[in-house]
Length: 324
Image 1 (cartoon, rainbow, N blue to C red):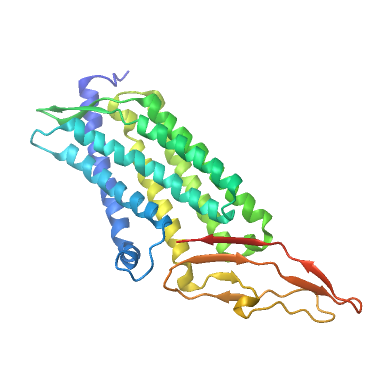
Image 2 (image 1 turned 90 degrees about the horizontal axis):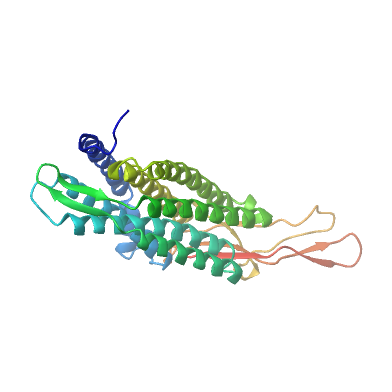
């Protein structure tokens, strides 16, 4: 039977972790470079920066800092303060996990039209999430002349609690989004409604599987290296999928977002005698200076001409603004 806590086993696992980190850094750098054009549009002022994108940029760049910091800690050949470096790395990693959930929560809040009974509980859940994340920054590392910076102690119970909390949080966000898009039938049938739901579903599947593997290793607690070896891939996978979902939604206007437009935009619902029902005009928007994606369904009126009098029948009202 393998003695996972023996020095030889820890050294072997450390080599495996080193190679894994370099692979993850390469994958993330590739993802980072191919999407720099999106960042540049906002950083250069070509598209207006909206406040939800602040969390997107923090999520994206903190993940990069975390990977670079861990790579430095594993590759360094001269003595450094390993404790400070690893605290920085874990702080960046934990904040990345929290920002992923915030980015998805903002989408859900917007879909629900910023309703207080949705925004309030989500904010409470976010605060609870961050309290656990900040509490979990308790890694211990030291300099070893033969192996460089090595992790000597972790808090697997706190870290596993963080991942389990994140999985439950993501499931709540997915359910809230699905419920709103399902109950708002017109939004659910629209392309942008399908985009929001499908991206959220893909994220949940990827994040759930990655986090589940991380939780298994944390619960097993084989040794300090094996306890966290799956945590970094989970954070990287969640960040990549979330950032892609945000970019896809923001870029939706480049191919034409569906907008349910009211009479203020010179669009109307025409119903004539004998017609089967209302026809809703779907317009295409072009990228504007705000760079926003709007989902808007206003109250319209359908006229029933079965007799000489016209009866007004309201259509369900749904209005949400995704300010990204």
